[in-house]
Amino acid sequence: MAAGEFDLIARYFRPLAGPGSLSLTDDAAVLAPPPGRELVLSADAMVEGVHFLPADPPGLVARKLLRTNLSDLAAMGAQPLGYLMTVSARHGTPDAWFAGFAAGLAVDQAQFAITLLGGDTTSTPGPVSLSLTVLGTAAPGAAIRRNGARPGDGLWVTGTIGDGALGLRAAQGRLPDPTGYLAGRYRLPRPRLGVAQHGVVAAALDVSDGLVQDTGHLCRASGCAAEIWAEAVPRSAAARAAGAAWLPLCLTGGDDYELAMAVPDAAAPALREAAAAARVAVTQIGRFMAGPPEVVVRGPAGALLALGAGGWSHF
Image (cartoon, one colour):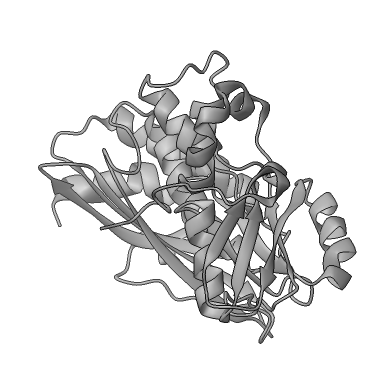
């Protein structure tokens, strides 16, 4: 590794390192999970021009990278512990970019009680490519899976749906966004830690590829069907102001990073209590049913809605 990399790590990333990182001076971290806890791990990548825009501030890019991974922990009912990160930036990237990137991470490390454990830095001819592996913990056997939904369970979501997909269009200048709210939701997801709890939520995932498609993932894992009540899906004031023509995109677009959850009716009060403690709104938007693993969307009076594309595909 070139001397410049050591200097970059020392200036910008070592201040983010926590216990187990060995101050980023060795080839790997050494970490013991808290007694009586299991490790929960997830990894995601972000590529310039695909997951963030070239002009996005580096601090927001860093925070989105961390938060999208924290959202996976939230879906499994896990608590953050630490993370590993790889940064591939263009040769000659100015120090100000790395300073802003590290400053963004520092803000969210403080907010979510997590620290850097290690990783790698490389140069690339472009685009900027980022990868982060997050480590969390859960009580033994308590990590929430996708395969626990049962016919009769309610389909619930956190927050509002559609802001991420609309926010991308707003950031691209394709949709009016006078307050900047929608673009802000695209650039800075809100991981819903503390809402999905073992014994309350039967199955969960985060809505990254679109509500309809991600609900389908729950159905396939659990071997049941689901229906979504379009009128019940919570949308922000900014999303509603965009107009009814954008509803299909709200239901199928990605980048919301809200949680979709299967919750037995008897556990609904406990879900509301957990959500209130986390200061997160939750809404029932449908129900799981017996049948082949497919999702239907119903509009007013129960009419089926045809939405076209079901959601985002990574390939």
